[in-house]
Amino acid sequence: MERIPVYEPYLAGNVSDYVNECLTTGWISSRGGFIAKFEAAFAEFTGAKDATSVANGTVAIHLVLEALEIGPGDEVIVPSLTYVASVNTILQTGAKPIFVDSLEGTLQVDPAAIRGAITPRTKAVMAVHLYGHPCDMDTIVAICREHDLLLIEDCAEAFGSLWKGRHVGTFGDAATFSFFGNKTITTGEGGMVLARDPEVMSRCRRLKSQGVSPGREYWHDMLAYNYRMTNIEAAIGLAQIEMAAEIIAIKCKVADEYRVGLSSLPLRTHDPVGDVSHSYWMCSIILDRAEDRDPLRAYLAQQGIETRPFFAQAHLMPHCRTDEVFPIGASLSERGINLPSYPGLTSAQIERICAAVSSFWRQGI
Ligand SMILES: *Cc1c(COP(=O)(O)O)cnc(C)c1O
Image (cartoon, rainbow, N blue to C red; front, side, top):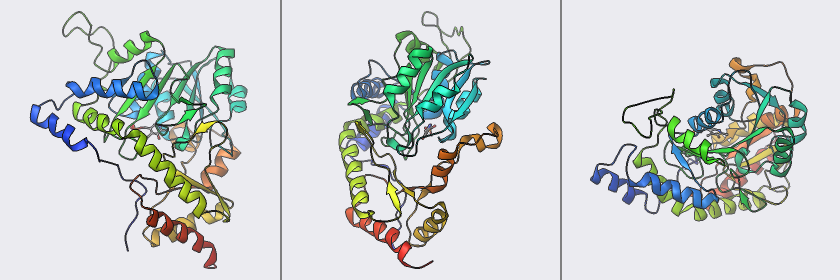
């Protein structure tokens, strides 16, 4: 029986040629021609003025929080239903994550909950575009303007996602992307930072590279990091950007095939709500009954179909636990499954997955 994983990177196009160019020329570290080319191509694709590459999507978030001078005494509002990196990076700056609930329909952060969580210490809001569906950016931008808050977009899962025709990551003060092996475009490990203010952008560039002074060699006049991407990673990234439209189109087709194949079951697919382009980083299903979730996953695993559960809520993790209850996020977290979602999936594989999901409810467990 053929095993179907949740994800596989799409390493077609110029990936091998560009990587080999790094090897044959010796430019394997964080200097070399592919870095600037990848950054320029990424900025162009997203419609940003400028972009700077980093080592992964987690340090991308840490870097922008530092560059925006978020730290001890500050509160940052973040959905509890997110990947833990969104929260850990807030903690790493010394700021306090303030958790809020999400919306049942889109799975995204609830703007009304953001409004309700604002205190005099609130410095920023972190919008996370979960599983490829954009957050409600009109409302979130309006709240941030009204209360003079910084807006950070964690776009790790939303490369290719649009809100009203505009790429996510261009609405806030800063935005971050991840190119981990299972993300929509990948560099193995890698990330990207966008920022609206050129000064924040230049602070990101200095902070990611040991804070070296622009005018004096080996003079470091700030506490900083090595968060740089390598030229080999950027070479993969450039080849990926060249195929980005193709990758996103195939992922949308995969999602469409799931939507048709999984209709009339006690579940819903994660469909776009409003004027958005969902990039379907993960094709997700939300079951009507939480009790079905683990048995369905075990049933699929028996048939060689790998799945993932939705994220556990961050405020339940031991290192950042609070006593709060976020009922919608809790319910989503217990009912959600990510299905195999990679561009290389064939229609026959999708049919096999849909047939397996359907047969779960017919086998009389
Ligand atoms: C993947 C991911 C990250 C972290 O990216 P890495 O490249 O794995 O460090 C951050 N936030 C979210 C929402 C993610 O899905």
